[in-house]
Amino acid sequence: MPPVWLPEIVADEEDLARFLASRGHFNSTSVKPAAFMPEIEARETSVFRHGPEPRDTLWAIADEHAAQGRTIHGAAIIKARTVKSIRLDVFPDEPPPRHAAIRNWPWTQDDPDLRKAEHKELAISLATDAQLLKR
Amino acid sequence: MYQSIPTLGVIAGFAAMWASANDGNAVSPEAQAVTAQAASVVKVLEQSQALFGAKAEAISQLMALAAGEQTANPISVLLAEQFVRVLPNAIPLPEFSIDPDGSISLDWIKARNQIFSLSVGANSRLAFAWLNGTDKGHAVARFDGQRVPERVIEGITLITTNGNASRLAA
Picture (cartoon, rainbow over the protein chains, first blue to last red):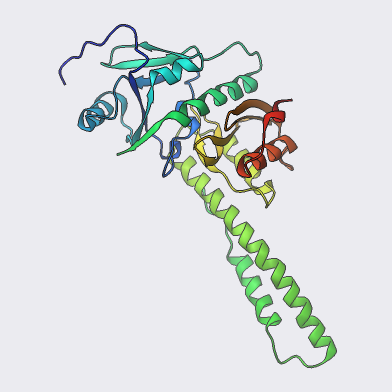
């Protein structure tokens, strides 16, 4: 794939693809909140700056950079605006190409379970606005 | 590692009871009383079987998901299974997914903007959140393994019946 130079700031209108490596992260019609929950160590959710089209390129990115030995079953597409609207933010995070990270997950709660519930509420908001693409 | 719930023994006992309940040759009052009792027991069993069958199916789905995902925490899986077992029969059964930290997420998705999502981790506390139209929130409740917390039952019920869940966080 040829290199692509993307703006240093992720624009509100940009599409973000969260690749789905678990069959449990979606059902027949929708994306589930677990698909957007942050990784605990990195405190971020990994996405790629790509929309639903062209589909071939989307799946090529998935296989080349996101799969890491797993099967990618689909993608959840959201607008960067959705992420920013709930006080999260998205930052370019290359390499790999087009990679970005959803950050600013609240980590102020001392109670890890309450923190998780707070993350869950935000993940529900992301999942609700996501477009499900099955492979 | 994980197996479906064995039901053959239950089914065998049920079949014997069903045969007794449908024995049309009973003529003495005692025999008719036994037949009537058997029939009522069969009716209760049928209802229980229908409900338990659905739970067994849900638990099998949970186990299959957990078996296919190395990230699932085994303790969380067992607690999630117990949660399903004690879930009141009037509550719809959830869908399952696995969180990045290995917790089991139980989701009730009524519509795109009506979701109740609960995480069962490796301890007795349940992290949950909901979206119900414009109303949303999150909270934590304790699960003792015997009863689903009232707040959780109320939250699921409100989502699945189009109610208002705003008081759950109180």
